[in-house]
Image (cartoon, rainbow, N blue to C red; front, side, top):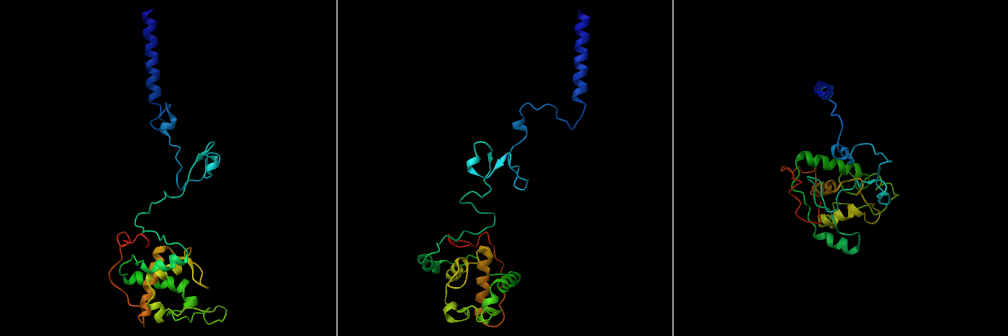
Length: 217
């Protein structure tokens, strides 16, 4: 009887050793698979619609995943959002909003000029004098000459408000230009208002620390 028990124990031990050494890449049986393998949705993974859903109504039968950033949060290095509404009161209040960007480097000013030429010069002209192709076509009236005293004296925040929401015949450029790009374009417009070629400024901007006004970006 003792020989049978010893032999059985030897067989069991040998089987356990062989099973545990069969593959270094195979973890074997998982006791709690939900703990070992996360069901979290990967941001760049293909969405399995049989498992995940972005519709809150499906939250009970599927894994609900909201891909939008948490409300009130900002991306690393981002500037504060612009919160004034698209109302007459918001337009008037925009005069108190300061440009959160510091001086632009020559490279940044050049890029701001490129953005201006792509999105703005078609109406306002290369020098901002309102003689762009659309401005001289006769199809669109009241193209602003940005070098006039009215716009030279206009606050950066009011100019930003107009670019963001649109003003008169000009539509919104919020979808074409990021908020930081809009502020940079305003810097470029200021250089045009000084006359001659844009004056390149030298100190680089720090977008993580320049924003001090909660309504500017």
